[in-house]
Image (cartoon, rainbow, N blue to C red; front, side, top):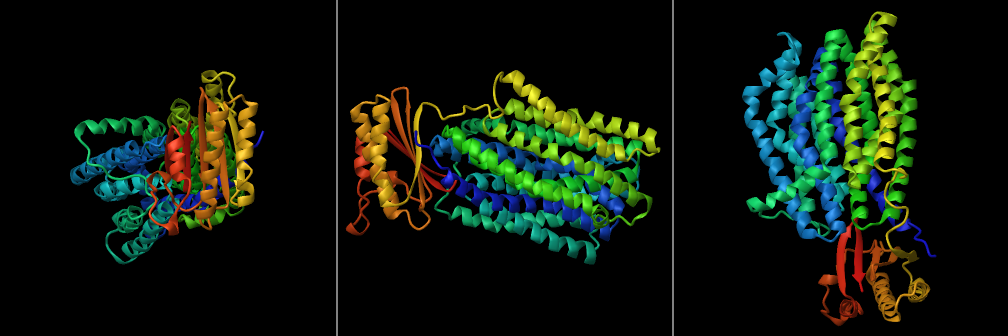
Length: 581
């Protein structure tokens, strides 16, 4: 049996990894830069205010994140099934809803920011005022942040991961520059840190023009009637794990802030802020690799390419843990320097930060595994498992574990700050174990991947180099496969002719980027489906018609006539053509 060599898919995954890392880097860097600038230019108390504002930040980002990630995965599955119109309608619905919700946040910001700050912080001190000023500007900028986050998710699934990363890099470079200007040379104070983030997201939107003008774009904005908005349920259902993640993050941030402030005070909040930012650094460097999974797996799942899904997951997990190993060593070796970066001036508080951070670093290994599970399971529509992991990791386990950690550690050293770090380590380990048990109960006898080991039906799955010598063997391989599996001579000849014509045309006109061609012939329920995947120039055979002797692609019209149906999509920046007989 011929086997696909996966070089074509691996090459495309490599293309997604670097933009993915850069995108994650830029996305998390804004929060880290805000914290560093605020702690060093205003003070540790203001740094704590940024953390106190996290529940509101989570709510502001909720719609853009959830509809963006859920919608892009659902749209990817639709594109994998060749439903471009449905995917475009879903994109349009999520865009409109995200914008409208953002406007509601903006209008309410002027009269709700202070009451919310008073709920988050008791008393009339500087911490409350800092928190109020920070969240007011964040709420005013909600439409910009929401659309920015939504578009980042769609661009990743729409053959443009480089534009996603370019947008976030530009947004955060602008944020970094404005942070320094606003905090150093204006009286804006902590509001300047929040304003710089909003302005960065807004100014960088000029990059979206490149997407609008792209010939690789599958999605368009549709004018929708009221009844068309029912399609948004596809984004909501697929985005349930992210919705739960954001809701749990709200509960987590609010709960942790309350527990730490009441049991330890502002010193505990400062230590927690440093640990949380180190976790953001881990997310920043590994999240971009893991983030390739929802961008690609949804499309592969829609195509029922389960072999490709395994290739994707193994590669992303391997790269993630390689990066994590480097991060872990750096945190352990340069712990004191990291705490100084976040405003530590040494002394007892500095020592507590160093001790807690070294304990906290132990949680990053199971943390990455849990993040991987969520990304993978939501991509294959196993939202129950993804939601279970998210809820445990961010709400059910973390709050009691942190509370117990503080109380127990207080009996050891009389302070309890290290108990915060212990609580996080326990949370990630318990979540990983519980997820394993839950999967075994829900899918008895299943492996981690749940999906079948092989693609459905009887498959001939192989790869050829883009050369005429190898194209000559395609016909023979298909005829021999059909004979071995008792497929009628008529269907065998049709499949062989179509495969040969398509591969020859790819080799002739695919351009310099075309180096491998994946061919899959699947026999399922008396239907033959021939799938051809290549990384050549963007070419839709359904739209081709003869126009001149200079550019005559022979065989396309023949394939259209002898096949029952023919579908095409440009996905994962590859041409994907499916021909049925």
